[in-house]
Image 1 (cartoon, rainbow, N blue to C red):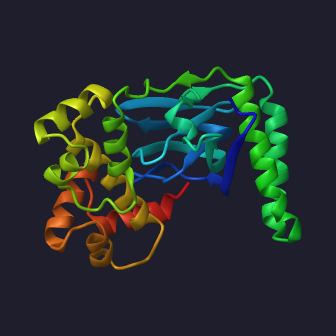
Image 2: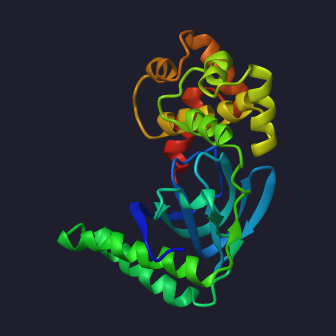
Length: 265
């Protein structure tokens, strides 16, 4: 499966919390996220479940998935952000995924590699180009030594796949059921049935979750004015955007941005 693949290293983030921390109602990343717990204890809240974190455990967070932490000091984790595609261009998480939590038998050896990465990051010298290779090594160790869970079977009907691709495209900032259905040569009701059968949710609900995830990333990873972020995602009325975001996350957009900046992982 992984004999041929494409790997993208995005960042390495050592995080140390010396004080109790409870993040904003939702944080979201746009890439795959591996958390290596090396010190202390915390709880990861993700998709309606709570996952205890302790030394020797690795946690995985998929893209565009809201999550929060409850952290007791002193807590340390060494985090890798990456993306991986299979030989046919399919994102890894669309076929296989690591468990939400797992405990590698060789965690000590992996931590030594991560500490090397930490030293390279601190030195900020020319050797930092090695970070990508070391991160690749860590990710492949996990993928080759941990039992992977198959993703949901790919839909048989290619029209459902085509619709999924349209809904996840970065340019998909406004939802139009008639336009999407027409592109798949379906009526709106046929489109909704087809998508629900394939993905277990309506096309509109799926698109709303995708859009919320992208909005969180845009707010948390840029300092652009909130009104500009709102317009990027099809919200012409900033007051409506703020109400919508509060309904989704429990906090206002600016409060979310402040919280992410304080507790970025």
